[in-house]
Image (tube, rainbow, N blue to C red; front, side, top):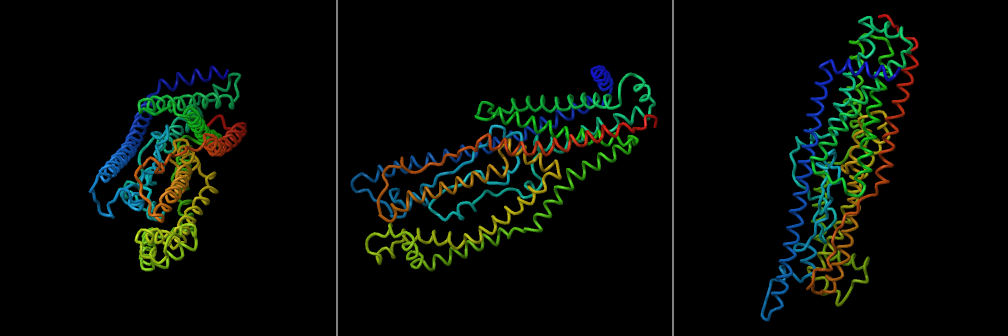
Length: 477
């Protein structure tokens, strides 16, 4: 009987222009979203390729200068000497620490247009390195970019509601519901068949259009973990769809007319997708306001000035913390500009660290507030899950920053002893390189699975509640 219901519904839906209009709009929106995401990923890839090319050319130039200085009579200013560990580690030889786009990055831009994806690492203070970011149009950052994640989070539920708001009320109003129920079929089975067909259509449209667009985007599906991430993507979409179908069943079971159903479902979409995330964000920022970034930068500049004024004291403190680096006459070292510069950078980090810690702690507290409330909004769950799968979320970037910090320490550990020992660098092969280590697919799957559960459980509860309530459904309107 369920098969007959599905077959009848298919004939009824295909005879209506609404389904074809929805399919057309959905296909165009998905195509444009993936194209926009692909364009952004292409921009990132071009920027990273240009940075890598610039770094390689710069190091080739440094090696050529070192070879030229090996010739008799060759001279160079101490401030431009490519053999100086101070110059190489500071101005001449910084290397880029780059975060490459994930294999499914075209599907969700996420936070990748807000968070920096490369840093120029040197012996400078850590805060000076991570504070240097590109200037972006603030209006664009505020509005965000249109991508496939946006289509799924905002438009996908509307299409589900457009096909389900009157799945019972229309037949009730036309007087055909009682005729259908005169057959050996229950109302629950009838609703299940209607929902099953609509879910297959809409989920099938999302999967088919997304797969076509993903292939056309040139995404690297052969990358490690890409297929698993794609499977997670489909699971999240199915869970999100199940939630809205469950809500449609619950509303349909109330026995209201089509206009009332449409109003209730549209109101639910507005509250859950638009209002709730905004209110949660306002609550997080109100409870844990982040200090002004301008104030943080100003504090960093003041710390830099204070450290520069007290360079000798900073050097003395540095030698106390690192006695193994104290070589030669301390009085001569006090006047050594390069050595003082290292001590000043260390002092700047010490002075600025409390300000930066406060800034980062407030952001972390805001994120914890959102995480604790995310199960009250399917939009927040979806956004977090889709960003995680695409590799454009805050968790991956936080892991990247931790690796940048480790690389910065490795960089300074390589150059600082050479600066204090006043040795020269003639071969740059040993200069540390950054290699981002992707987090395991298991870590991503664990976070995404939590979001899927947060969608499927309320979907099941809404569906069960609606199906039970159908026993008291007024067949005649």
